Image 1: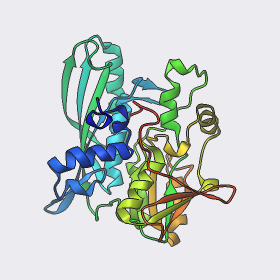
Image 2: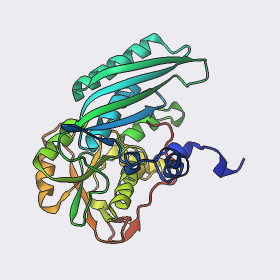
Image 3: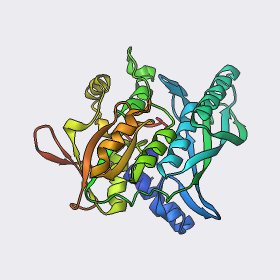
Length: 335
C-alpha cells in the first residue's frame, strides 16, 4: 500500500509527520477559530474569565517505568498542557481502555498513582469512563484524559515569542524518553534512568506571577527540538540554541551516545520551555530554582530576527547546525 495512504507509527511522534496528519486530515474537517490556533490547549472565552481545555491519550509501553507509570504520566501530561497555555488546571477526566486479563493489582497501583499526582497538582479527577477489550486488542492499558483550567490573565500561545527573548528550560533534557526505552528488556540495560514526569503547573504559575512570559510549552514528544520549531513557526521568529548551555545529565549523555540519539529530540515529561524578555531572564531562573522541579533551570538560547521559522544550534566548536522538526518518531510508545 502506498506510504501516503496509511497511518504509520511515525505519525504519532509529534514531529512533521504528525503535523501532516493534522493538516491533511483533521484541520480540513474540524478546522475552526478555536482549533486553528494549534496550541496545547484550546482557549475558550467565558463570562468573567477564560477557560482552557485540552485532551490527550497515553499508550506508553511498558506501563511502569523508572520514575513513574502511565497513570502519573496521564495526569501530569494533561496538567502541563493546561499550564503551558497560562491556565490554572482545575478538573480532569480519565478514560480507561483495559485489555482483558490486565491484573487488578496493577490497575489499582496506577489508579493510586493518578490520585497522588492529581493531589500534587491540585486538580480533581471529576469524570471517567471504563472500557474493556479482548485479549491482544489493547496491549494492556490505554488512558485518555481531558482537562479544564481557568485563565485569569491573557492566555499564553506559541505565537508570542519575539526577537530579544531569552529561551529558558526548568530542568535537564531527555530523561523521560530514555527512562521508558531503557525499561524495555530487549535493550539489556542494567542501570536505568528515571523519568522526569512531574506536574509543572505551580512552577509555571510562579514564573508568570513574577515575569512577563511571552510563550511557553512543555517539551514532550519530539523533545525540545519539536516544541521550539513549533514556536519558531507560530511566532515567525528565529531561535538560536547554544550547545554549551543545554542541561544534560551524564547518564543521559552516555545513553544517547550508546543508542545514537540526539538528546534534543528525546521526549521529556517534566520540562517546559519559557520565553521571557532578556531583562527578566535571571529573575525567571531564580523563581524556577525555588521549585523542586526547577533546580536545574537554565538559559539555553535566544530569539532572533532571522532566519524566521528556523531553529539553529551554535555548537561548542563555534559552528552552527540546523535543528529541524523531527520527521518521524525516534522512540515510539513513550507517552
